[in-house]
Image (cartoon, rainbow, N blue to C red; front, side, top):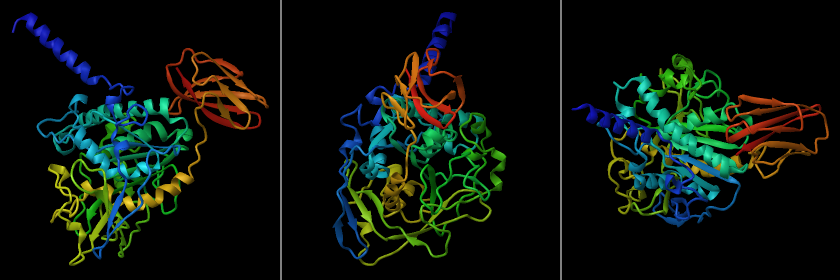
Length: 481
């Protein structure tokens, strides 16, 4: 190869790498699966949330036809699991190669039924492919780099949503498998040290990837301050679990588990250090107690027919479940499932149930001999979550919002908001001691001591402004354009 050809080849590689590294523009509708403002034909708007319930005695009933996309002041931000099953090499899916059909089916299967609670935001992102998770020879640094690459897309999409569309709405975060990991990173980077944003968090639902908390604590594992949800409803917490057949040997953590990967700590994506995981234990949550007497799964929900459907089937009281901290396995919430067999009216074997290929094989009945229920993690808890979410939404009280003029406390006004240069405070009835401007991670950027100050030198984005007077302390969001 001559010099000219070599230079051309190097240029092509450089341009390809540059294009791959470019974070998708989340102002564009094609980079969202669900977005109530950018897209008029997104999958969430096409949902028919009618639910046909199949009872163990063979009877059938139609449950509530749930409303969706009502302005409930609640937003759902969902990160879907691994759909790129490439095994020939480790890498990230290019944005134009995302299997959007499979992503949409999985959204319907895992999250669609929750659209009744508010607006749904689901970005497409350049996820790590399956090889990243199953290759034992992959270095911890490479693994971390592939996952950080995927996370940057999710982070950019969330920041776009937060900047342009949140407006102080309460937030439900949801993710499964790889999506749960990336959602965990988002919790650490954006929420864990940000009380104002955490006050908007209804709950973070982390399916298929259990959290690892410090011994005798609900914090101190992969997150520093956000707790795992305990037996009492509490907003701003995380629900996490992974599902197994009750008579299976739950797999121990592997050496290439993300929770052993110190590069995630170094990159600020998780809190814990990799060498403390052996000193951690399980937490239970969402009503399943460690017990030898499992409780019935109130409602298992899944898609009703073929790949184009958006209607649902519910299976009531056909499984039992409990959680357990397996012996010698550190951390995590393991949901163990018993199947309740009904003869001859076992509706789980209905002939018209979906027969999808690959990882999306028939959801009910679960294939014989299956021990690891990871693909079905989300379905087993949907009945409980449908009952729990209204309570969590009701007790979530955001501390601030981002209107055109932010009302802070009972009297102070911050304007203009968004701002480009000078910001004013008015109606200040007591002496200002300090005004602290922090970024989304809670880091102090600048401090002021007067009612008027300039933000012209700040980068565009969302900041938090904390106003300390001689009588009180109040916090609000400030958007810099």
